[in-house]
Amino acid sequence: MSDSALALTRGLTWTPGGRRRPTLAGIDLAISPGERVLLVGPSGSGKSTLLRALAGVLQVSGDGELAGEVLIEGRPATDGGTSVGLLLQDPRDARVAETVGRDAAFGCENDAMPRELIGDAVSAALLDVGFPYGPQHRTDTLSGGEAQRLALAGVIAARPRLLLLDEPTSMLDPIAAERVRRAVLGVLDEQMALVVVEHRLDGWVDVLPRIVVLDGAGRVIADGDTGRVLAEHAAELAGQGIWVPGRPAPIPVQVPPALLTSLFPTGGGAPAVRARSGLVRAHDVRLRHRRPIRFTGARRPADPPALALDGVDANVSAGRVLALRGASGAGKSSLVAVLTGLLAPTTGTVEADQGLAAGLIPAPHRWRSRDLAARIAWVPQDAAASIVGRTVGECLLATAHALGGPGGDVAAQRRAGDLAEILGLQRLLKRNPYRLSGGESRRLAIAAGLLHGPPVMCLDEPTVGQDRGTWAAVAGIIQGARAAGAGVVVSTHDDLLTRLADDELRLHRGRVGCAA
Image (tube, rainbow, N blue to C red; front, side, top):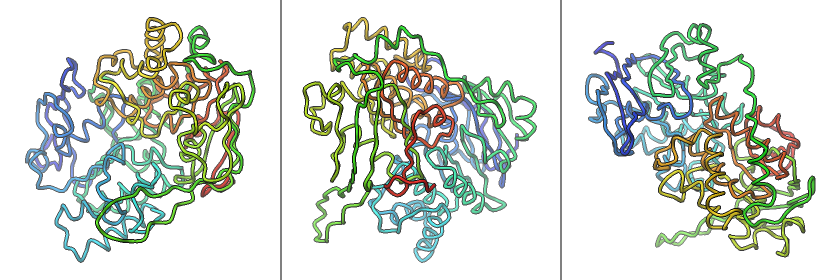
């Protein structure tokens, strides 16, 4: 440990309010100027918490007990004074302005960069990360991957001394991810230090010479040369859930058949559907997103609607998994929203099978919310948007209770316990859901969405933020739902998950096509 380190932690321990066990336990870490560090660990191991501690915002983002110390250039991290850039796991949390240019300039302005330099710094950063729109583009129209690139551009434009990136490529297609890695490495100089948190290590292990590994209890179990640590501890690290390059893909968890037959396809008051039947069909769908109306006191022309989908056909069938693929911003989330009835197509049709509609009109977007929720589950890309309870347990049961699911409260609670066990949420049932890691939040959203047994499941990026073990659990749930007769749609950049699908639809700029 060196007092001359750029960043230094001594005995860092963080115990969130209301918990007995710490998220981080006795972390001793020194990061020198110019170091490039890969920080890895299973889902919920405290990686994001450690980045927040280094950024000096840990106690800003939540109450808890902090022990030990965190120093940046010898001063408490909370004092500021040294430029630290933090890319949050959820890029939408970083949005501060209505337009791309103003948003990306926020960090530069806060670091008191001369005004005449900010424009060039922002333009260069947006170009480096491959951002597809100009500075006047509205930030509330971006896809998850586009929002991730914008947030990264804002961080690197300010050229901080310590750059902290929390899963910077998790929502990106492989081409965009590689461009982001090049952009990150290209902005570094000899005095800038970099710490990257990622679950998927491919693309990073060859360019980040040091690796720090956390275990499930928030302790450092390995710290050293990346190649050596991975070679000497590959089996142990894979057992911890870390995606060690070259290891065999994890095998999806086998979900007990009794649990699945209690859920699908007649749960939650939803109608029974025929095996292998079509459930939802989209034909020649076009979707134009209209900008939100804002009252600013100034008169200006309304922004033209953006074309998100253009002549798309898609079929969701019982007992099959449909994978939606394509680059960031290709229209995958828009298609999910149309198939789930959350958005009405501008033109074209989206119709449910007669068996799924069961007396309702065919168009899902015209159904009452109760009827829609009973028939179609939606797990959004922003998993935190589905949190509706004070505890994880309440969130799990919220939709099932609202619909008066089969078997009453006792049966629903039993299914909730079984799903929580499979998805690694059992020990979290009494926890505040807003204090979960990104991967935990996503698994909670998946469990809550399927607990009442809807015949159709639409999951937007369900494996983002998952380690090997939790990926296997999520994949097992998807396979099990298919086997029980549900129709499943997954929007994903995950090649492993796509291999489990029966059908694949690739979008390119809102159209069905083969371009990456």
